[in-house]
Image 1 (cartoon, each protein chain N blue to C red):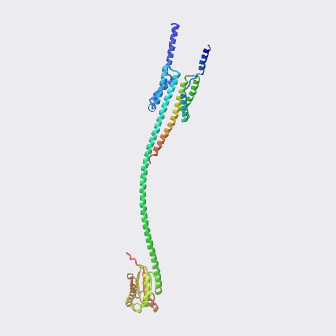
Image 2: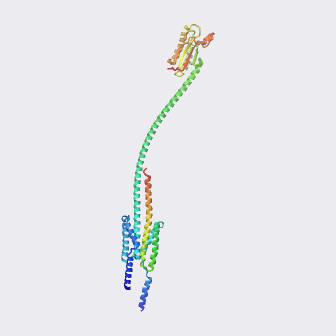
Image 3: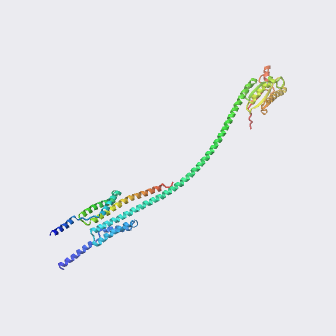
Length: 116
Length: 316
């Protein structure tokens, strides 16, 4: 009888403490992308800022779900990672596009100088 | 139809509806599929094929989830992730395209600059050539100018020297003339008239009565006259005029006046006066300087005049 009770308590205890572990590499990659996006200037690019905010929200949601033992936490974290990567990509694109416009302007200026 | 049959039909219909709902593709998956089709037909297929392939795998996973379990939250999660990956693929493709543009612009810039540098070098070489030519021309012109200046300097020196010499000679001549004129004034009357400078010598000092041979005392005076005449400008002309008083006939006075003039002329020539510049003329008694009514006046009229004048310019 005692053994049966202890086993039940153990299962319940496990069940009470059970949480879905979000893979550390997944969390690290998402956070790295979010930091990178901010460094590249995502806050100044509307689309990038939107996806950065989504990534942050989804990360928080994933952590809460994981704490509650919700298996879907891993997928929500994957959503956060995809948004973070997209935010980083959009921020980079804006920077490179600016450089491309400047390069075109510079070339135009060089051509305008013409030959002596 | 009993109650059981109705219940079976209802169950079948509800089951059918339920089945239909379960097979309806969720919008996120539809959007992801459409995005993938658009992306695979765009620049991503060329510029970011690897990312496009990864996005396809994510989409396949969503499709597989939908095929196995229908419209579940997990299916929508997979579709969401696939859609983001497709969008990221597009973003990376556009970024790559911009990078290509930057590289192309840089390359074109180098070509244009090279062209400009070459053109500048050509222009510079041309300018150098022109500059060298200009320098050579300037050097030639400067040398010519120096030579001219030197020549002019030499000519100027020569001219200055000549001028100085002439001035000196003139000063000497003028001094000599002044001295001679001063000496002359002691032995003869000298005055300036319209016909020139007239030197008057008394006939009684030069000749014995009715004679035309010079007295010895006359020669001393004529020596001084000769010095004064030689000191005159070389272009001056001299005429020796013999004058008599009105006593006696003109037949005797004329040759007498001429002979006396000639005697004076010949003596002056013998003392160095240029013979071609001096002539003699007999005036007889035609030009008295005083009335012949007294012995003194007649003595004054017996005279020899030497007229020194500038050469007459003959009119054409």
